[in-house]
Amino acid sequence: MTYGPARALPGDQIRITTNPDTEPFWQAAKEGKLTACQCGDCGHFRMPPTAICPECGSRAKEWPTLPGTATIFSYAICNKNPKNGEDYVYVPVVVDLDGAPGTRLNANVSGCDAEDVHIGMKVSVDWTPIQDGWVLPNFKA
Amino acid sequence: MAWVNQDKCAIVGIGATDYYVRGKSWPRTINDMAAEAIMNACADAGISHKQIDGFSYYSTAGAGYLDKFDTASLMETLGMPHISWSATLTSGGGGCPGAIGLATAGLMNEDCTYTVTLMALQQLPQHRLGVVFGAAAPNPENSFLQPSGLVGPGHLMSVLARRHMHLYGTTQDAFGEVVMATRANTHNRPKAVRKDPLTKEQYDASVMLADPLRRLDFCLETDGAVAVITTTMDRAKDCRHKPAVVHAAAHGGQREWGRAFAWMGMPDPYFASSGHKFTADRVWAQSGLTAKDMDVALIYDHFSPMVLMQLEDYGFCEKGEGNDYVLSGKLRYDPATGKGVNGGVPVNTHGGNLNEAYIIGMTHIVEGVEQVRGTAINQVKDAEFALVSGGPASLPVSSLILRKD
Image 1 (cartoon, one colour):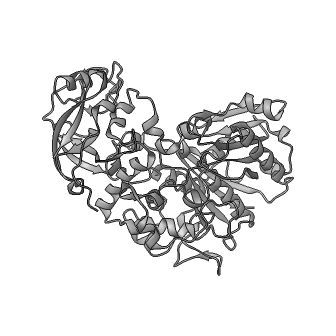
Image 2: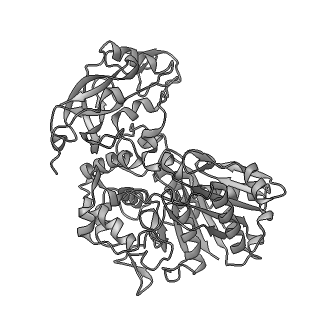
Image 3: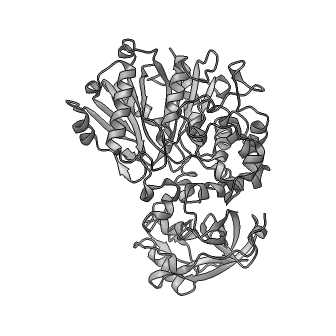
């Protein structure tokens, strides 16, 4: 099927909330830094951020700045804006983050036609301002 | 090792309301529909609903996704004098057949004598399941998923289906065959919502909602209620029908699946799976049986690819071979012989969530009971064992093997 250009969903319709475990991720995003939650003791990465390292039980966390590149693990192609039902081609992607083995983000990809998105495709972070002054990591081809 | 509670309990009563297209059950209320289903199930069992002294829920006692059952309210509605068991599995539709295992736990602990498992749902415009994830208020956990616009369960599972296609060469033709094979079982079912035969051309023309999934790959959105009564085998002998014996029941799963498509962190090969492998292994270990011993399989079909992936996880075929298994016609029921086709085990002889009605898995339990009683509309000849699975979703997922008495 032919869909045409993939666009990220409009940031003004997106809202997130945070808690003390997840907020450092979003604060880094505000500064244009893509990070992931890393155990301060054993070095294991986990996303989304949680209170305790599932490998070693440590509460120590680090938030290294990642390269900001990723690989598409899987995706869907959608053609209606979920907020208002209007025609809108967007591609939700699940990506593996470079520099943080085992971690993923769910985002939109833009910068190419939807039908050209493929598993294994390399993408780089593309920041989308959203509600309440937060910034969302999306990706571009 | 055989399960300690094997063949100790049975489902003795099944009851339901009519099935309504989404939203059409109004002005009935949730408790009205739940009470009708419970009373019908008790009548089927030959007991009074006032003998119910246990509630074994799943889906965190959810009634649909926004309403909740409350045992005290149901007692107030139905006049039950006392209850001595009220428990639920957590998460969602994955736990549906596992609730019968929960019922068994209450019965074997001598906490209760007759326990009901039920679901009622009413999808008024503000309660539509189809957009339930997108409509949920943002929270710190779903803030890592919701902004991607994966708003409904079908959108989420399309991402799993895509990965399965990538790894194993699975085709959309196989998803279509799941829908067509099970649609073929509803033409003679008075309560089914979709009864017309489905051609491949009609399937291919179905609108793409979340590529690679079409509207017809998504299950129905329906209203209604279903209840089943479970009791001990000694009491079951005095009920109206032959008991549907609880031969095995398990719920749970492994960390690699975890929150599943509410998370998307599953490593291969779990990502492109149904998340049922752990639980499948448990029911087979409990029973000493395998997929090929099943006479009929009632496989939770919220989305067609998840049927294919469950068939792999339960061992009806090898992992990655679901496409060929499905396309060889092995899901089909042959009314002429009362058996499967091409050596397969008939799947969803009631039409399932895709075609008959979607009551979050309860219709699959009802069909399993009717099959081992020998009273199903599309009766599998000499059916002795029926497998019932819960929805691939956040853990726990679950399954149940019913045996003919």
